Amino acid sequence: MQEFDVVLRAEDGTYNPIDQAIVEHPTLERHAAQHFDLMADGTCVLLYHITGDAADLEALLDDEPSALSYDVFRIEGDGLRAHVHLARDTVIAALIHLMAEYDLIIDPPIEIDDDGGLHMSVAGNVDNIREAAMDRPESIEVSLEEAEGRNVGRVDVNSLLTDRQQEVLSVAVEKGYYEIPRQATNEDIAAELDCSTSTVGEHLRKIESRIVSELGTP
Image (cartoon, rainbow, N blue to C red; front, side, top):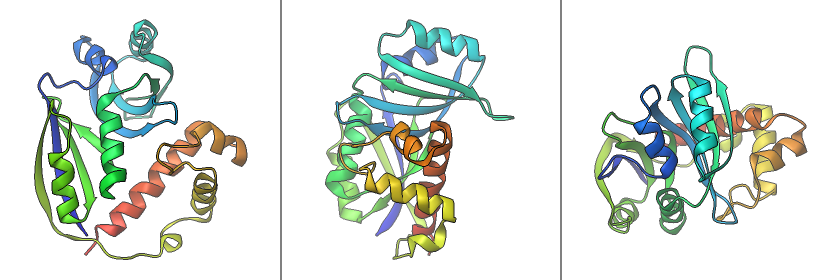
């Protein structure tokens, strides 16, 4: 397996109605998608990293019909996070189906550049990565650059994680969080572990980042 730096780019630099509304807002700015997922009912969840005023972002999401629910919170010294449950998003759905069909791993966060390009690290079989790039939605341009020296090998997952992270991962797997489509939400895992959904989300992001980072170490 190898790791590639992948850039996806839409013609207008936006990928869903919420994304477009943020771009058009005078005081809000996108920086990254920290996490994204496809739910069993076809809707999506997305964790944005945004800078700007929380009240402005909440007002925008209140006015956007595709935002089914949301939670906006501030990270000290690092802007806002918006966990948004949104109506079907063709780009997110396509990415997740491509990941499943071609056995690929996307290492979050997905950084968003000034022109709306989505920058991500993708690990997998070289031929599968190239085939997935060819099988993308027609509205999306893609470029691939091999990440130098990033050959992927086998690792002992448990050796990479803290005891609490192992517990969170075990519950997530048991409840079907990593099934396609996903059979459980952060809320389901939080209820099982008796903690907040934001804590679960933070654990899962660290778990996924730690595993993929280790997989990419030569």
